[in-house]
Image (cartoon, rainbow, N blue to C red; front, side):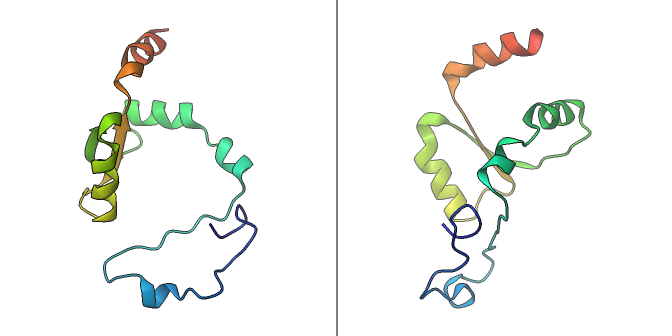
Length: 99
């Protein structure tokens, strides 16, 4: 890991422009773990539910399909965001959304 979270900005012997294949994106994150924890997830969920925040979902996987989800991500075949959900939480989520 590199960046602020990893406390190091580069790898000693890594040249990303040489190592990253064509059509693959390099994503960076320049925040600390506290920044990530302050992400307003409830607000984002409300915006998605209301249709004011559009999210292109490419593939949906169950938690027991996590290996396939990861493969899909590595092969860049999702066509949008990859969603992984845990079936054991579905009832809890429905109860929470009704409250």
